[in-house]
Amino acid sequence: MANISLKDGQSVTVVGLGTFSKSVTLPGIYEASIVISELPPSGLSVLIQQNGSTKFSFSSPAATQQTINLQGMLNCAANDTIAFVLSSSNVNDEQLNTVKSQILLTGFAVTGFPS
Image (tube, rainbow, N blue to C red; front, side, top):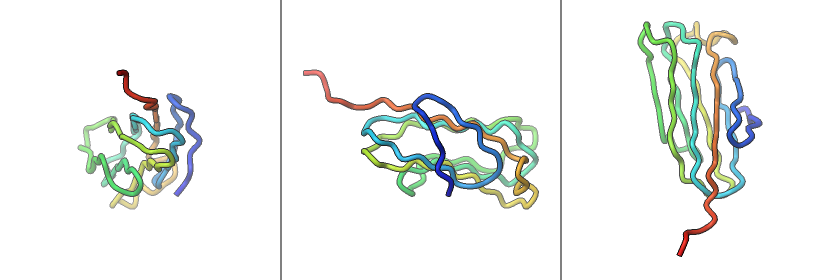
């Protein structure tokens, strides 16, 4: 697992397959998003996990699909880990520059409810 350096609202580009994770420091609602822009015909599987539990997933893109955009909202406690997991059943996807992704994590910290 590779820890990624994400600043709130700023995307990071990753290449290849693997698990890319970030621990959040503040409790709140977080939007987790991954856009995969280079898609060979493949057996690609994409997961967004919170503390090891899969919250959102996508697999086996169509051969004509040019991008995948997977996103969702997560209700996080302080120190929760959000992971973006890219794997494949096709050995061709394992080459370093075959899969290129943009990961974005945006937080909306919860400080309390108005009375």
